[in-house]
Length: 345
Image (spheres, rainbow, N blue to C red):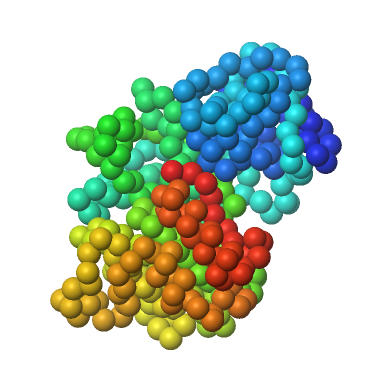
């Protein structure tokens, strides 16, 4: 089917395959259509229908609650015929060196327990891909409706192996499947890479990462690339990782590896929101700083007077990300161009 999207900067035309949603078809075609989560949650990919009435892949998607009459979610729109849509933002062509999203078959080859309710999954891809540090993929599993967005933990270009962090969601069908027996060998479908919260070493800024829980995933890729590029030889790095209690901490060995690469310039602070900082925990991890409090508040206090020339990244539960954005804008007085986050959960 031929899809035409009328945007602020002109019309974009592309082909959409049967069973493919309009957003993915446009992104795959190299057009910067508006989106955040890519899974029907945020409502950012809304569009007004001018011609055609595409069906919905997930009529119960939370993003529909944010729409006005006549609007659709492009990430859920399955056209049965040619369509013309209208979006408010511009939709320019992707840069020549962009990692253009694509559909990928993959298989889960390894699962590792990180905490009582967090696992990591290693996936082997059908072919090598490139992605930017900080990007994510949308995963779908046969028999489970809807997709879920997961940031890549590892960073390498090109790669045929992706690592994701998954947090248990009580009653979540995909979560139950991934935490259940026999998950190794499961075939999955991926679309990506997606996301705008990316790190590029040519941006000469200090790096500030603020993560809550499984939001640490994309930060690991950012820190990995920064260390590979020796970015901390010239710039400061600050990571604030927030969890509830010490038993919720993970990736400490990996963070220590990063810390040893840049011992003077990379600072790692672990924030505990629901437990006091125990002396034994501090003694066991002398290379890290521990603090009690919500991670955005801890970051704001520790970064006071140090926000100049900073590019900030935020990831985690939506309330935590929203609080972090307020802190960065009001206390840090950062420009919006120097705050990066992706809205998915």
